[in-house]
Length: 280
Image (tube, rainbow, N blue to C red; front, side):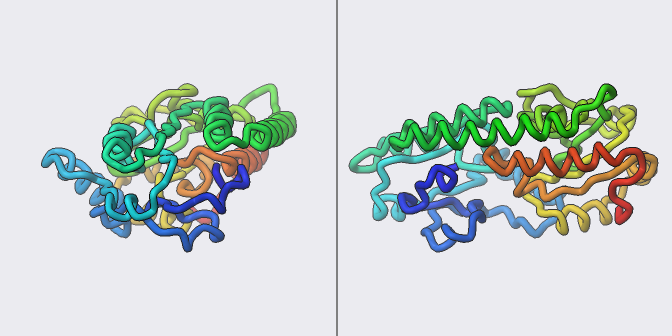
C-alpha cells in the first residue's frame, strides 16, 4: 500500500514477509519468525499451534533495530496474528520507544474495507490526495472487471486457503469472487477464514475450485496439492474446474494486487466448465 501511495522512500524498516515490490527489498527487516516456511502446510500448522500453546511468539520484533531506525509510524494489522505482527504487540513496543511512534492498524475485511485502509494510511502519512486517486483507480478497475465478467448465472466457487487442516478463504475473497462473475459457496464477505472439516467442504458442489494457499506462490501450491494425501478430496477435485493461484501475492494480502486476483478468477469463470487448469 505504501509503495502504491508513492511513499517507498519513507520506509525505514519492513517485515520478513515483505517480499514485494523488488524496489524495497534493500530496506532493513525488523521481524523474524521461527516457523520454517519450506515445511508442508500440516507441519507449519503444527509448529504454529505448538508455539501458541507454549506461549512462544510466532513473529518476533527486533526492538533494538527499531530503536536504531527511529520510525515515526508503525503500520500493523488486526486480521491475523500468524501472518503479521499483532496489533497489541505493536502498541506495546511503540510505548517503550523514544520517541514513541504512532501506530496505524489496518483491519479491512472486505474489498471496500481494504480501500478504506488505503485512505486511512494515506491520511496517516499526509498524502490524502494520492490515496484518493489510488482508490478511485482501483475502484474503476474493479468496476470494469465486474462488467466484463457479469453473467446471469454466477459460477459457484470454493476458495481453499490451506490444505492441512482445511481452511476456506474469507475476508475480501467473496468480494473478489463476486466481481469475477462467481458466487462463493464457502464464505460471506467479511467472514474470517476459519477451519472446516473436509467432509463439510466435499459436500459443497462448486463448478470452480480456486487453490490459493496463504503464503505460498503458485509453484509451491501445486507441489503442496500434489503431495496432499486425501483420496476423497482429489476425487472431488477431479470432477471440477481448478484454478491454482499465487495466494501469497494475489489473495492473502490486502492491497492493489487484489484487482489482479479478480482478473485471474474472472478469466477462469468465463471459461467454465472444464476448461480452466488441465495441469492439476
